[in-house]
Length: 177
Ligand code: NI
Image (cartoon, rainbow, N blue to C red; front, side, top):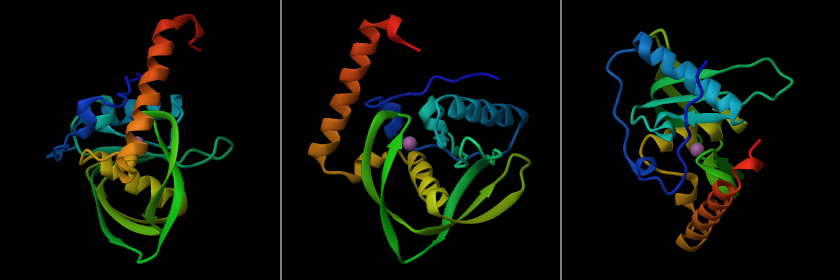
């Protein structure tokens, strides 16, 4: 198990477009396992490769609760191929925008097509938190963060708060857990 460093706003890598994967290799499987370990450790329900500085179209997701059996998804080259007409607005957060939450409008259900860790094509229809998480994570692959759905004023305020919190933590390393 290896924990990867999660990049935070305003790191410019988070704004880049990620490249498709040509082949699912052993190295890629290891990366996806490391991403899952990093996500569980954070803790979070989703993590996209650009959040650990790797501009490849990979996301890992697990929206199960702490007292439920784990149900991780490892998605290579995921694409949303269908979605509901209906939308819902829910508070979202992001490991790259730590401890900040804001409401974002998302489709209520989505169908995602992806390649799994064995190189097999999969199709998954999702609703609820899983559907929200899929939409959030896939946007990371095109350099879009949930705060990009907010007004510039709100977004700038959130980024400033994250930077301020980080400066404080860097100045007080003994407070780290
Ligand atoms: Ni995120």
